[in-house]
Length: 112
Length: 114
Image (cartoon, rainbow over all chains, first blue to last red; front, side, top):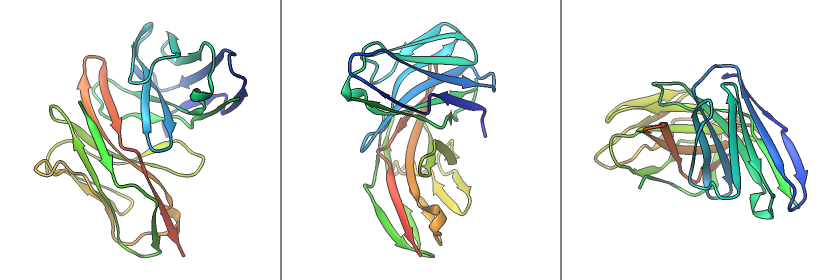
């Protein structure tokens, strides 16, 4: 299994509070991704990174920001959480030249 | 744009039954195709993949063939087990300037009964 961890694994928060999710990899892969999983939608890309400090928006980026100051860490921040951001969040990594992404275990977020 | 359509579930089968989960896609260029599996409470695991037309991906008794003429990548298994109960996602990958981007179908839940 690819060395990907996500923290926290579960979080309950209130509307309007900031939330940061962390993805940590030990594979030294260049590309990192954040997805959200919702029933009937599969996984949808929020943001991705193609190197340290190099990030870009995905399909559903509104309300989210990301940062990558080190190869191994990719942070996803909800500046002011809303109930529509209740979801399961997955991080993925991929290496240069590979078409395959490897996924972390997920973070289940509930916004009340 | 790119899109993946897969049959809605849940699909309920008895143990040892034959499984087919349909997947069709729309893509620009020449995508690679994937099946991922998600067991309860876990992340997605790569099940199999195919990178060009007529390739067959296989793993753990599952198979899927990349059919360019029908833009399909149907997942099959000859004899399912209770342990195959999971959600299955079809996905395609195309290369863009910032790496390979995955587009997922909505997922199909498989339930196998003893």
